[in-house]
Image (cartoon, rainbow, N blue to C red; front, side, top):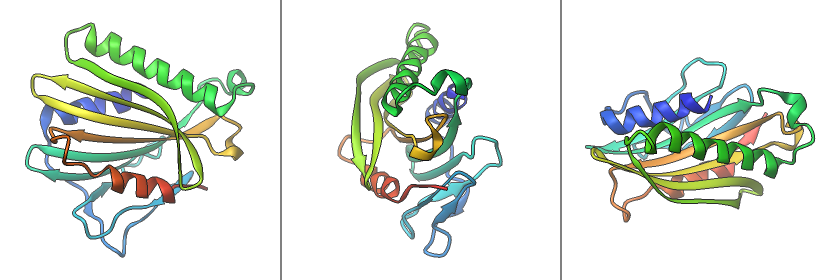
Length: 192
């Protein structure tokens, strides 16, 4: 599952694809998936894609020429629910983030595809929910991508599943950011 998200983001960085999907307005900004819902910013040139997949993936994008801002959400389920029963949400998130970091190093850095820098892991409260975070920067010949990964394990999930929220800024200057929009969406994120 990590490879799917990693490859999707990498393809966007490489291709600089055009914005597709449905323009988000005040009448369609409540996004409902089987396991979670959220409210997207209306009337601000954000577009949404909701492909039909078992991971309940939602992509919300804004594009300004070669600059792409993206919010992605999906449900991740533990491969071995028995193995994670004794883990706390923090431990599960730490295992996931470490695996994600190791995969980026093995699949990208060591193969010379990009440079990974400014990697930081932490914890942040947004909208009364605790998210386990990982921020990093990916630099390649075709551009730079700043990424924030937020993991939320709903108490009712017994840590057997969690919601992954991923925000990225591709080819944007450090002063141009829509992370405040992403954080406002996280504040509305609700497990179902």
